[in-house]
Picture 1 (spheres, rainbow, N blue to C red):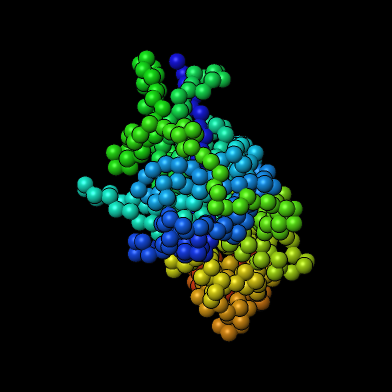
Picture 2: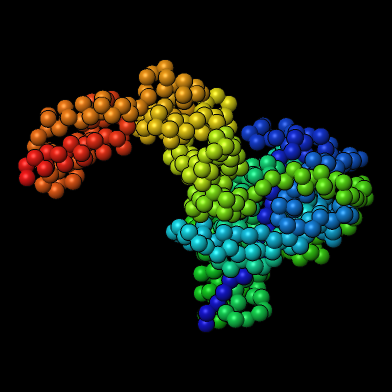
Length: 500
């Protein structure tokens, strides 16, 4: 029998606020000594009262809007009871009955998970059931027979996002999480770094016979700290459950962990149900009322996201899908590209200029960033600016410099931040376009290499590039390449006619 997997995803996003969800403790704890970012509130001391972090609520609303969710005008906080050492109060302040964000959806570009590039790819829509705010727990570290708890993370704002069971493969799960990670980074509300715990996900999956409408027995996978681990754990679990079902066995509803070393899932505990958490309203916090003015203010902060930009770049600038995806991978890259485009002259061909910018950004800019281990933010502070790249491309289009010289100028501008035009003038790099001067150099090269000229006349076209190279060498790379090709062709054709 053939089976299909049904996957729903629960993802927890740590919101990058200055303070914690219900107290004034710093939420910027990564790398700090254990238990140094704590107070009576996040340690659950008797009599300590929580206070709502407004910025965290707004960040959650921004994510909800980016996920096309409805925003609840009224919601309240609830206590979710469970007893583990990393939760000092014995309960978590969360939302259950009325999540802040609900009934949304996200589009996933299947192109990213097919294993090869496709210019035209299908997009899959994955529905979002809910996204609600809560507080994070502490962190347990196990060492031999001892367990140590660090409460620095306890109380950090956490947004839990739950999908409908719309995901149908490990690759689709990977694509969904990649898209979600990109969204929170575009919004600037979270780093989304799974390795640092800022984004944690728990796939819920079951298998059912193909064509069946009923769900199978669901399992949940925890302890996934990378996108690759999510894909690998789901793929393993699909294989494991398929073997069990085909042998006549039954799947148990359990919570599983992922063992990265052994690359297998392991049973952690039986899965709780909602009633096990004993939800009831949090008596120490007032309900949230969100009016239209507040929602409109938050909505205005949501930028154009990656998928919308990709569509616009392809529609308005004629860029390929590949170029559009690369330029929108990060919000900073997209804004750098658009700033450079806007610095172009008003009479420039925007489609041609957009393609030229895309090529320079993906080749020379990215190459130098990698070589110098620099982020785009660091480049903006002291290196080449978007308007300077636009100026460099204009110099090439005006035949002031050729492409090879432009690469040299770009590298110097990258390091110094100087204007390309100033570099060209200071170093005398302007292209030689004087016909008589170039013809004299071409004649010298032809006279110095009669054997190679004869090879070109006899049809050995590859040798022509050698002669072009000799002209460029004689002019220290400053010759107008197009004119060199034309003049060299003319001189060789004259030599050919002379031999006839």
